[in-house]
Length: 389
Image 1: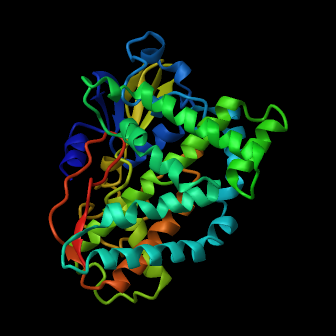
Image 2: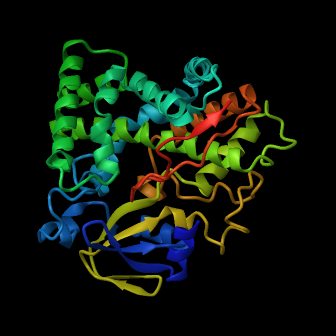
Image 3: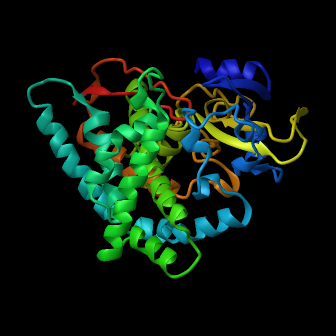
């Protein structure tokens, strides 16, 4: 990927400019990315970010929802551990493994719909008809939320991850955030009136039982689980599908009924074309030195996933898609360290089931046209993926 090579060519830790002329440092190789994501004096708490505190980063900055809030995404230390623990039980191995059968049912149902849509010989959009609805339906079932909740917030989620026309007053990210808060606040109230056997109810009860979860933390934790529980998986399924379609020999001679085959496919897909482009942001609590570069107190640092995952000092022939690569698990697609993605196990399971059922049911699937990449700092993916089944 040109972007990854360009970033790495400038050094292991380099100055970059984010949208809105916001300065940051970027780690471009795997070892430095690991150091940035685990450094004891680099925190997720935006209270330490000079740019946010002095007003040079405005309230309507297009990435503001990713860097400021009351969820575990924006917390450090004890607050982060507390918030993560409250939601974490739903994403451990046993609860996630128990979802395999339901994920398979939803997958097969969506593939039936995909096949029906393709009967006239026209191409179908694999992203819209398959990769999008699968994780949406799964995370809604985990949360006990109506599917209409995410469908109704789709525009708002896009505003938070894809740059909008700044001349359009409706593109102001603050409108999107307010809409999300209203919708999820209503979901909370619905669960108070009619609790269920779901994660939303468990989080509501954690709030109502005492001071373990504030009202703002409750709503923002739901928001984080909801958006991260589907947005990254959409891109993981779409991106790895595209990688397989453009590398037709990748599965040659593979046992397609073997779980290990698809585990390797998923891991290499996450390394080769991560659903996350860059992991933003960490903030220096003191003057520190990383990779021989001085970072001043209050400065922001990101880890460039696209660059680090193709680090040639760690991966042999990093630009090749190779499911037998011995280092294919060595990626930061879901982060690293204390903030490693809580839902990674679910995302991998959904992607594994989706790809396995898709490529075994439609072995002759092929691209109908080259897709255009999303214009996003945080996400890596395609706006559509047109295929012939």
